[in-house]
Length: 303
Image (cartoon, rainbow, N blue to C red; front, top):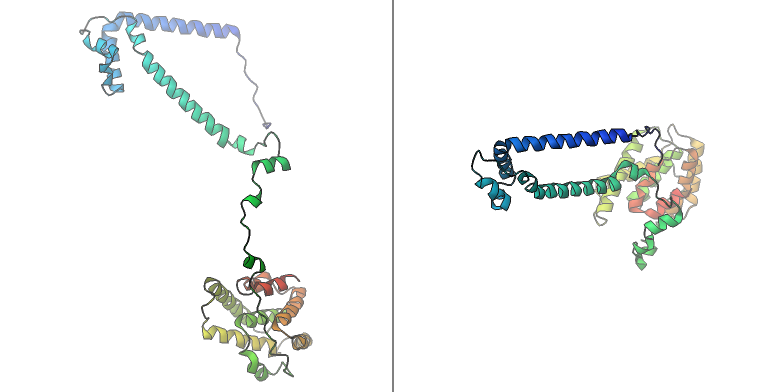
């Protein structure tokens, strides 16, 4: 990855390195001189710090017993403070190395530069296939009955024998034989092709259809409230027969189309094709069918 901006690397001259080394040696020599001079006092302070650092366990070590047995005011051996610090230095070094390994591990895996940098082999098809297992290894083969899916219900068209679909009473005589989802789908497709004057009816049917479909998806054996089914069928009759404020020519065409179909499945599909062509039938108007009759929804979507 090439950064957008990179500051130039500052170089250090050999003279500066020698000077820093000399300053470090002088500092060590001065500290050694201070220890040599004030070891009776500094030794007691050093012993107290080590005892506090190790929760008094240091007293059981050799150097701990040495610092604890020297009488107050007596000087300590010059090398005592250096040799007794070797163990603590090694422990601190190990802890520093461990923290460094953990930090390097996190930076090499979670840093933003690592996440957005392409791998060495790029994003070729071979690289992707090597990084991910083929889906055939993870997907369980469907069962035989799952491949065919549920059998779509085919409902005979009860309106085929009616002479005039604008006769609401005649349509009401056969409305009870229409399943609720066919009634809702027929209303929504007819209303999209030849819109009703009352626009509240569309919202009522769509809301009831979605609620009924979700209830059916949760429990297919549960029966819908009779009031809901009756409302859907009565509004379906309204969509078929009512001609107030509607396109009469289009309504007659829809009546001829419905009367010529042998099944309601075909009738709704044919009406839906005209509704989709008019641009007034939208996906939410028939998406709820996926819970009840996926075949009918697929037939509508195919247009």
